[in-house]
Amino acid sequence: MTEFTSEIRETVLRSATKEVVIARNRPFCIIGERINPTGRRIFQEQLRAGDLSAIDRDVAAQVAGGANVLDINMGVPLTDEADLLVRAIQRVQDLTDLPVCIDSSVLEALEAGLRVYQGRALVNSVTAEDERLAAVLPLVKKYDAAVIALPNDEEEIPMGADRRIELVAKIVEVATTEYGIPIEDIVIDPLAMPIGADTGVVVTTMETARRIRDTWGLNLTCGASNVSFGMPARHVLNATYLPMAMAHGMTSAIMDARTPAVVESVRAADLLLGNDEWGGSWIASHRAKQAAAAAVP
Ligand code: THG
Image (cartoon, rainbow, N blue to C red; front, side):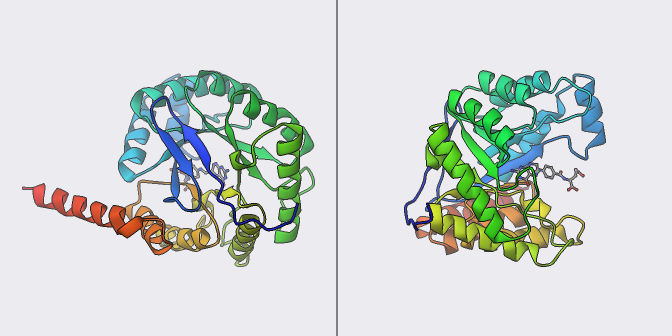
């Protein structure tokens, strides 16, 4: 289980009309995080009243900013999350051809969302807890989805890389042998935590990411804005963190695609890490910006 692999794993996601591949020899996959009511009081009230129209603006902003996949989270206390999630997924599918990442800890909501989604979704997320693995992985298999897995269990969120690696080994073993999930459909979130809580946490995440890449070749993701939580100049920290994580094997992130400095930093790292052939995308995006500036009267 701990033999090293240099194999490149392709996690294939699809909408009805578009395919997105997450892999370490491809441009980084930006998973837009904004379709999420956490910490947004007005959006929560709208959702409670059954008004999902704010999603339209969030989709437009994430798409315009360069998101490749959209995370959809409808976690509002005291609501029918399954119903909201189904309606949100349908609305997003009408607005964009980007594949989605279905973000819910409520099983009924997850299944309802997977049932109506037309394509191959990314499920966010499962932990290494026996009960969660047994509940979520059959749905991942049934609906032919890919899954984000977090290396924490019923005991703890481990603070050291060694224990996180043990839990990744458990997840990989259970998902592939007990549930028949292809290894390339497992995307690990090595747990990105706020640097403000402990200045060692980012180094631990980097080490964990690199070891997962070198051991299994798995794709990786993280909640990128967690890192700067509570700190000033968050965009600078996020824009610095992501290329570092990418150099350690991070192949995607759940992040805010509305901030050009952060997205540009990711695309610069694509080029510098050899994943933008001839700098084609980098140069094309620079020319598009020049043309847009010139078009302003
Ligand atoms: N890993 C995985 N999934 C995740 C996370 C993770 N999903 C949820 C979260 N973390 C990532 N998504 C978001 C979505 C929105 C915001 C942050 C993370 C957000 N935060 C504002 C803030 O931080 O200030 C609060 C809202 C606001 O003020 O607008 O928007 O780590 N697998």
